[in-house]
Image (cartoon, rainbow, N blue to C red):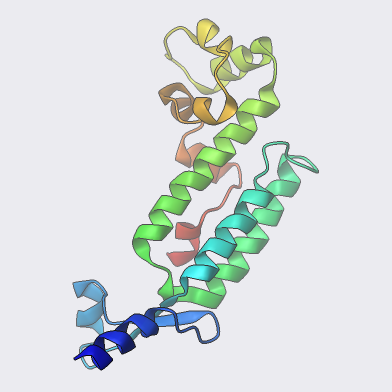
Length: 173
């Protein structure tokens, strides 16, 4: 009994070509492959590593400009997602995508810099938002502002997608 428990613990840390294997998957995936017992998944270290790389790319200072950041991010995600294809954990993917979109909104908020510029961008992007003027003068930090309702209305997911931004879920479709 103890030997079996020990082998189960060690299996979680086993890594082969950046993949690990699990028997815990959702019912849909089990139904697609009823004879398969072990399913490949991305190893935890690689998930952490790609998130760190994305964080460096989405640096709020936007080195090289926003267009360069978009291209770097697209290149990184395209390569990573093509390598891991169907093995990316769905829950992790959704959390990371939300986090990436928040980083993108933070990048835009920092780039708008002055309250006058922020107010002008809100007028253009967010029709019907209440008190855009006072919101543009907010002294909250960039990260906090990127989570607000007004930023989500001004830069919706569809707007980000239309302007060329990508996230992991786009490559899974």
